[in-house]
Image (cartoon, rainbow, N blue to C red; front, side, top):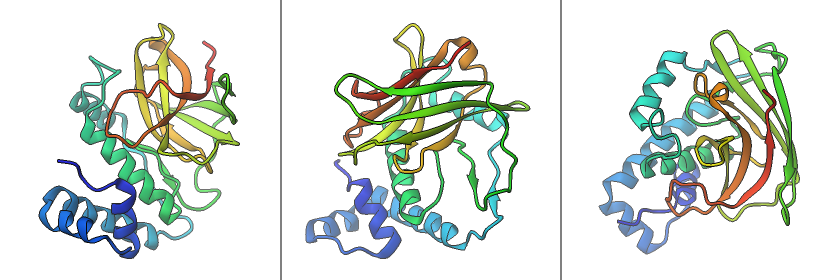
Length: 229
């Protein structure tokens, strides 16, 4: 069954944006879309009540380990279930709409400017445009205790027809892991699975993805850089 577009559900959840007759009919008969609208409304309500100084802590490493096992990323890092990709789009769309700084699968949400001291990067790479593309950026690899994060800032990315997605690609050029949806206006900070960069996942790649529910990389990379060892 083709579900309603994530952007439609997010706007409907956020401000009761009107739906067409066909969309209303689908929503009335689709338990999946109704559940997603309700969950997005709860998330939007949380965003509205965040105050300066409030923050949601990133999950501890053992939580990420369970997520990795559930998604099968440890054995097949290039694959991500279709339902997970749809969740990325839904949450990313709503987060941008309510002004949250949000990444997916463990990205830290921070309110206020000085709630968490910034750690110096252990590795940095420029993100340069690929041939025929525009935009650039910088990616910093941050380690704090047992946690590793990738902090990404971007400039000049065109308004997408679809969405931008952040990947770590292995230096073998074949295996890759999605870190989540990238906001082209604000960039983002993303939790990196344990030991991933030491296993060769050092190519930072931003791709333009169509909203087609296909979990694989679109092969339409826009900017890219490689973290030094």
